[in-house]
Length: 163
Image 1: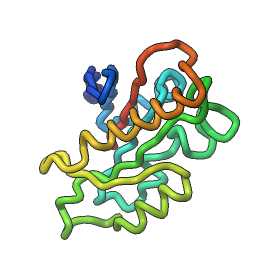
Image 2: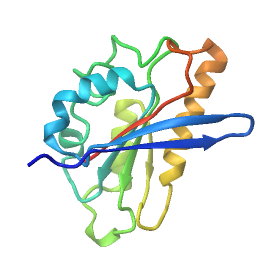
Image 3: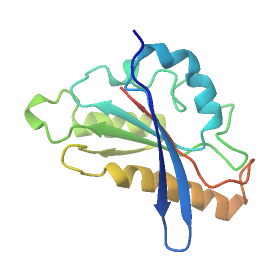
């Protein structure tokens, strides 16, 4: 039986403009891995979430991600015509302090290694969930101010894969 995949469409309001986000939540289901390369090629920014109770973050959550070696958006590819795709690495369930296996320091170190931003979040407590997406949108907007519109001249989009 196939796992659940959900597509959310959100509008992010900024100081002077709005932005439509398409957030794809595959709930970490393995059957969607075959489609991942296409989703990565189509996305302009990424929020990659991992669960703090999963020790093997790098192997499970990020394998094939836009910033992981061997992915379609590795060193030889860009997320768009104006530069590398912005990526936010998010450690979820930070409210479950006694259950965590991945420390804040390990998450930060991995983000530095992968040259992306990092933050911790709790969907249950509504901590940093929106902020992760806002940060990716802000990075895309900064890129566009410097380099102009992207390849398809649409508002920034962001993808998320849950594991």
